[in-house]
Image (cartoon, rainbow over the protein chains, first blue to last red):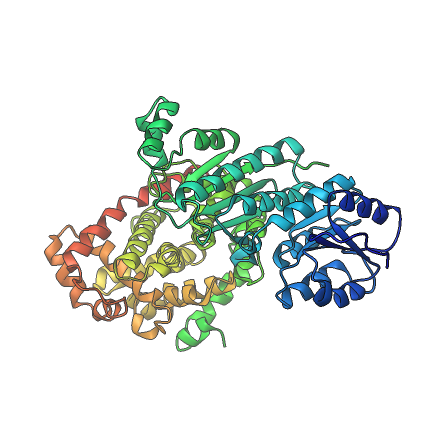
Length: 284
Length: 308
């Protein structure tokens, strides 16, 4: 184990085999004001957990005999406040889902710039416990179902995971458009469906079909009649301003953008669930 | 013993008819994609993606389903352009039953009309029965059975088509004797054939691996007391057929309501739904249900224009 430099009150443990990469991360994190402990194995890191209580653990998934995902489970089982960032040399969709399900703060594919790690560690440390309480399930008929608190930070984290899940299946431009629509609709649910009440949860389901991706986003707030709104207003900007002034869901510009980028946008009768779909084409 | 065998074991003529149909050799089959979709949907581990892929293998079938989904009947404000979206919005059960329904209509085209039997008229009545059964399911608080009731209504008389296709002369003779003697046609079938269209239809439905409640609804639609009532699909189909028949008799709605209330199945079915504070009147329900009969033309029109 490398000797920790002079301690600050922010503590990160890096769990990976020794080498140039680990040294570069160590240097970058120290320079950013972090106290860094390096562990060669997950077991060594587990021993450290109670004693040193690091704010963040950066753990390599491929470590033998125990990997980063197992360490993540131990940390969550012990209900520690320590945030976990998983790194990997071998990107696998199953691991992305495991990280999300296990409550990892981030998932980083190697190689990456040390500055990216510093950003991820800073972000992870700033997250509240709410931000990580995403529940993930394989629902009926194979839908991937997620429940997330109404927080913008959580939405960003989820957006990143979505991109990782679909980047090998969807061409970059299409992925960008889908991500834009996804965040737009979730933001709408956070702001107008739940009025930034992080205790209220948003339900997201998605499924990748052969050549089409379908999303369902549902909040528990009062819905709105998008069809009627668009029928009644020709000037969307005026409508948005008017609705916002009246304290209602604006739904105009954002929804129009989404309707333009996705192939289909369908609302349920009460207007608080939206189904979006877009044809995708294999990136390969 | 299969469910169909349990229900029809005392019919002496069924074995003979089945044997003769099998000797002809080419038993009608529903499109492979529709059949596979049904089988895949029944597995607990299946995903919606798999179901979409299976149905999409038959492009004509997929296109027909989308046309029905986008018809005025469903009243969706936005157009559903793809099968994944149709599955997402309407659900797997609704789409699978629609797939089977439009497939059946393509298996037996409306030809071979005689003075006594018209396939076209039978399909029209069956489609009316399908929409009626679906609406009825909602009206009596059994909405969870709505899409099965739709399919049950559509296929309940499939045995008549089998008889017309494979035992045409014998079948027409049976109908003639029913007309002459004033017997109900099901009694005339038992009399002359030693079996009924209900039993033959149930046998075919079992060969097609249709779900058991559907086999039962076909076998027992003339006598729901023989069915298990679990789920109560047979009574829905039985009453839907009665309602369609009453509507064709062009009596007053009061007369139809009285006839419906006189059927013991009606009272028993009403007692199954969730308790409601003010139960709707039979007349009110009948009026609601009869509106659906108009929708029957939709599925028939779509299916006949896509027939291959």
